[in-house]
Length: 609
Image (cartoon, rainbow, N blue to C red; front, side, top):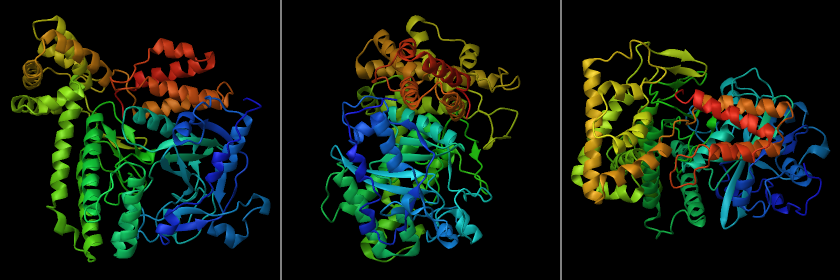
């Protein structure tokens, strides 16, 4: 760590707990004084995000120094003085108590017996404040800052909890450093691949393996923040929350300003569009993101939030369910219906805001916003599938405008879905965080290999070859039997693929060799062989943790390794694709060993959950 710096880092001083949410929604939070939590050190700091936010100057190097580390700890190494502390006189030394207060926001949560949002919200988090920089406003929150009265443990057991108490589910108020690092890695990979997500700004590590996880996004409001007012029938509070969200989106340049008579309809259309596109992307990329009726585990724009139950699968493991102590999660195919129900709830919500009376949710089963959702969802599934095949965005729009190409594409998608959904004869079984039933085909592999094969060969692949390319390591002997029906499906898939290519040649007016050459270059990136999964993230994070604990990786090394790892996981052909050996050569020997091991984990667990 550098000893001197010319930067004074005064921009961090604006992060002091103050936030306009307080003025807009005075009943929407519980305020807490905080104290310094000592014994922490900066484990990870996202220099790129800090520069994007304007927290750091654009020319600041990706290196930690003593002044910056001290400023990060001064700003974020805090924990709440909760109701238990006040009742038992354990607030701590006066010198450790910080000025000002920090919000724990209220929102709906299915973990709570009260399904109205009166007792639920940030159970182990606080909002550090709002930071304005580079023409945008950023919300910053921290997880692992102690137990609040909005924790499910407090509501369900009817008593206060001391921070650190591990005897009740959701009761400790702490966060695990390993989980936090896996979330930071996953969010940076998804962000690079243009999937909406909150991002980790900093991780502060403590000797007991816990951490404070600092997260940032231009707007951290969830549907659940609004749904609590809706469930309680609080028209004034709901209208204030909706207006606050609209003003933030317009102020950040995300939405154009609307005339007063259109602003609520525009919000509803945007929610329907955002959730349709996000759900289509989750299905296409096999991303498990637990969406529920409460709108808790997702942001208002359908960006990913809270990586505790978020995974990316290597195959379409559509029977996987996460075990959340007293309930099982939805599965990937069920995400669409849950997202659609969230949109339906927004239709009810906007009607309530505009008319002042709350109608039953059933009245909105056929609302026009749900038709918009279905239209956007279907179109985006087509767009994403054409992307996997290797077509550019401009080519995709031309193909979707052609009726014959669209019909063939729909047939090919159904054929691919047959293989995606095939499950192992071994049946369902328990895993460490839930239950699953293994998928047996990797369709990414066939979509990656077909254009290269047909670029150089006139004859189609044999049915057995098509199946062999797709068989995953989860396929047992019974699953690998070459039945007549399965061979027929393999033959159909390849035939439809070639028909799509032939029609694309006509629509795009391009030669077969030139088109297939382009598809090869793009498909190998979009359908990359070594693609992250939830399991590989856990093991990759563990590799970094062990290196840090052995003092072979510093916080600078952690950040550099995270950044290079994410660069090696790009699935966007438009982005520069780094050469793996070149990336490794840029690293120090210690970083190289860790990064090599992490990349091996990705390859080893590329088909897992």
